[in-house]
Image (cartoon, rainbow, N blue to C red; front, side):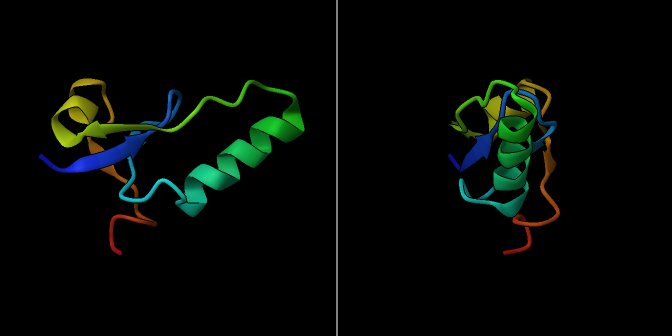
Length: 62
């Protein structure tokens, strides 16, 4: 099974835990005083089942 990375609030999966989209969103959360949730590593099927079936346009191409 293919492992991907998801976030609690996002609607896409990422191929890299250190994707710029994830890092940028986490920095924004810190700046706004919001809770920063950890990135989860799951298999692609689970990501899809959790409503995160679209690939990130930034890291999915790499």
